[in-house]
Image (cartoon, rainbow, N blue to C red; front, side, top):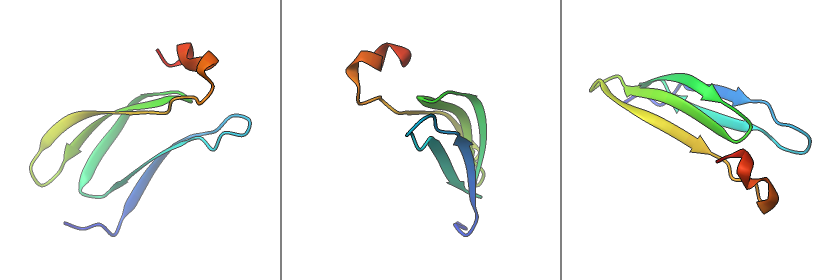
Amino acid sequence: MSSSCVITDIVIGMGHSGGLWLLWISDFNITVDSASHNYILATASYKPTYISFILICMYGDPHHSRMDEIW
């Protein structure tokens, strides 16, 4: 497995937020299907075995009053 190449997808931050970064090595094919400031939804596949899966990366806002934005 080669881990020398890191590929990224970035959701730009708002205000003081740093944004969301999705990083992966070249052994994976990643397609970002949807993204917001709170999540990244992607389809992933591991090239050596052709195994595919859905990847959901979520960021929960520390301010409970904004939790409805995610759900």
